[in-house]
Image (tube, rainbow over all chains, first blue to last red; front, side, top):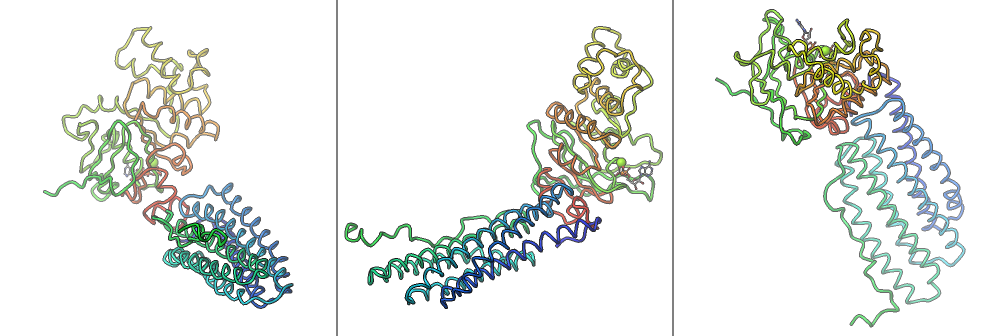
Length: 241
Length: 270
Ligand SMILES: Nc1ncnc2c1ncn2[C@@H]1O[C@H](COP(=O)(O)OP(=O)(O)OP(=O)(O)O)[C@@H](O)[C@H]1O
Ligand SMILES: [Mg+2]
């Protein structure tokens, strides 16, 4: 990181902005972990806490926007300082979305916990851990201004997509086997989709961190491994011979 | 004999004009005295028709470089230069160069407006007067064209015979720009043209510079980073008599390549 500003209060403002983003990210990480646990261990108390906890992330987003706007108006930032402002706007909105997905997962956990336990629910924690690690690593990359670590997260999105594909197929199989599982499995499908979306947001964050450090978005195609859009629904089977 | 280091544009993202290079500075060094070297091997290609900002901390050699372009430094005793500055295929420091003719093609505007103690009209047509122009029609025409070009015509057209010293600071600076334009130069050299002006007058000058783009090659020294960012196409950052970074202004202010540039433009300790 570059040295300190001649005007010390400027450093202080930038530090507070960085802290707001990091705290916000840490909260989202905790929310995500709790939501996934609530699904895996059928913990409705925890799920309730996640639903209520999202407001804190929204409040931090508002604070980050306020701090970033203040620096823009008062300091006319340039170069790496300007990129921090732009990155803060982007990172905070990505994290806010991640928080929304975590809350949505927790809400679905509350519904699932009212029914019978499902074997299929075990696929969710695996995916949840993968995505949570991406989020943690991208936040570490942000704090340490480590472009290599951000790039590593950026590449991992493919893994999430691949895992989502397998979860998707697995859930389809359960639903075909037992029609009573269709409603809970649909919830699990949405949970898996939410996790896949969180992976996308963590990947966007990785791009933003690379931009912050290097001044440019990473080049080339983002790795992609989600082919579920090409999977035919089971009822259409037999027509594709 | 060693080759003169020439400016290597691919190292940087310099914005290119449609009119080619106006000033090609290569391996240019300047000494104010035997032990007072003010410029070290400066290499820089100034694009014709564009606005180039020179920035850098106090004493880094911005004014020295600017004054080297029209040989305003010649008057200083003990001054020595090395290297080369080409202006439209002419070597500025060649012994045969006609310095008076050269300066006519490079108008200069200074930090403090310096109108002469005479009427607004006489100030503007001064370059023509010293050329011996007497034709009233031509003088009047030039005055209107130059004052319009300097965005001052509407404010002074009804009082052209009033003393220029009665104008506001901002108006005086635009008058000086009009005077520079009246000589029909190719290049305008400006050394901190807005540093004595309030924000409104500054905005007017910036608007004026924007309007002059394309018709003149403008090289401007400024201490105001935002001003450099707002009005220039390319920015050159100098430090201790050396050119540290030269590139299109957008890149220099969003993603400078050299840490020293970052430190300076973001207001950090070097
Ligand atoms: N006439 C002179 N005789 C001797 N040294 C000079 C002369 N003019 C400038 N210098 C020295 O040359 C160096 C560059 O000065 P210059 O005026 O070009 O700096 P500058 O970048 O324009 O600074 P500022 O932003 O303060 O105007 C300084 O060390 C200055 O002291
Ligand atoms: Mg100067």
